[in-house]
Length: 69
Image (tube, rainbow, N blue to C red; front, top):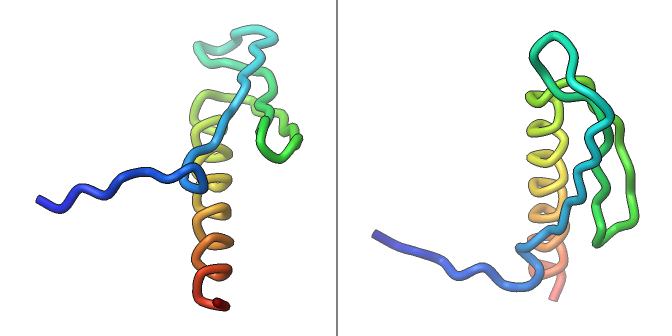
């Protein structure tokens, strides 16, 4: 199995602030500490999607930078 090591560009730091819990899910905001960006979320699933989008966006940016070299 091929295991790749994470570099500092592959890592993201998220700060999750929970305001409350309604309808058996979380509501609050997530902060991308590396980019100083904040987004509100209304459910745990939405939180995971936001984090996934941030990771994919950062990976695409890194790939674009490395191909431009």
